[in-house]
Structure formats: structure tokens, C-alpha cells
Length: 95
Image (cartoon, rainbow, N blue to C red; front, side):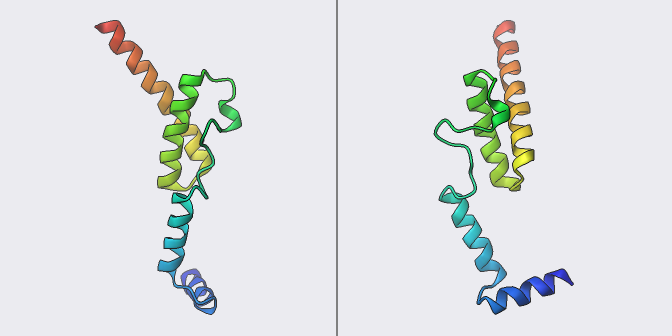
């Protein structure tokens, strides 16, 4: 039912769902949805070491690209960055 209403609204605006998806994809690629770049980062990353923060931002941007969920991207970015550096440290220790 909701899908029909959305399709009707898009037709009234002269758009189809495919056009909207392409527009959103273009917006993301042009930096419209990616909030963290050029030293910008989520406030929750503020007190993290720069190396960890930069890796977390890199991961968060990829998660955001995939899911579109900013909260999930922030949490996953930091968690995975910590795991990355813990694994890196363990590998150096075992070498």
C-alpha cells in the first residue's frame, strides 16, 4: 500500500523510483550524504587518537555508503577501527 502511494507521488512529480535512486546515488558520490571528510569526524570520535579516528572515519564512510544509516556507520566505524589496530598490534607482537 505504501509503495503505491510513493509511486503515485513520484509520478505526480514527474519522477520514477529509478530516477530517485539515481539522484540519491549521484548526491552521495558528489559528497551530499558523506558527512566526514578532510579532517571532519563525528563528535563521538573527538577524544580518539588521530590514527584511530582516521581509520574509523574511513570505515564509517563505507558503512554509510552501504547502509545509509549514520548512527550505525559511526558505531561500526569505531568498533572496526579498534579491532583493526588490536589485530595489527597482536600481529607485530607475534612476529
